[in-house]
Image (cartoon, one colour):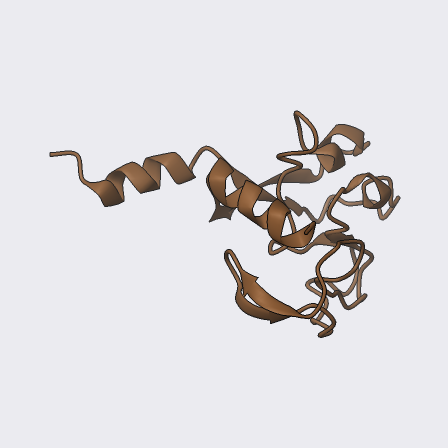
Length: 130
């Protein structure tokens, strides 16, 4: 029997957020390429409003209720990092993740812990770029 939960699990494995591995050389090539401004230098705090059209408060598709101007803690203190709540794998903007396309050491890779469908990625894009 093919259950709905099994279908969703299979469907979600097609897409995932991107992470930056410890192989990062801190060149910063990825940061300006992100259409969601989801990439930050190590130790930098991030906001949903950074480089997006989102203002005020709203219900984010995966993070729940968020405040656009609330400072969120850095995910990495030493290396560039990607906020998974803002990453859409460039879906709706480009055919491939731009961070991975420009990375000289191939350290922008799929985050196997954050799997999302194309529908979820597009809903995040819509939320961020109202």
